[in-house]
Length: 160
Image (tube, rainbow, N blue to C red; front, top):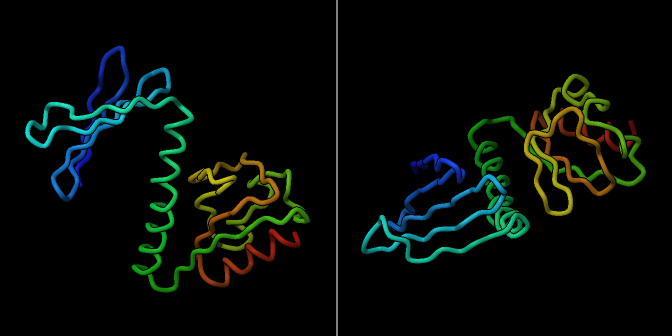
């Protein structure tokens, strides 16, 4: 699928794509953080059939609804493609010694060989969290590595 990006001077960016069924969809992202969801006419691909204005919170909810399953689906496909790769979501218990500490403090990659590829907090996905990301009780930490590395990460996050 091709994603087209168009700069809109003074406004922001527009991204457009065509679905497998031939529907053209677009999103305008303004500098102020608002979004416009565009559904183009089937008869005239340059004319909009519908425009839905979304504020920042509404755009986040829609992105969460559409995006979170996509992250999980992509990781599952990646696991199928690479034999020996394990992906797991590890929940951080309130008793973990890493609650209130950073990803960098845990040094997961150097200690276990596994990589933290996302963090899910209250339904919001943080892809590729930085070493400065602070852990909170209840976080789901998505880890990719060997089965041994993923197990070692779970143990590390639970017991230190």
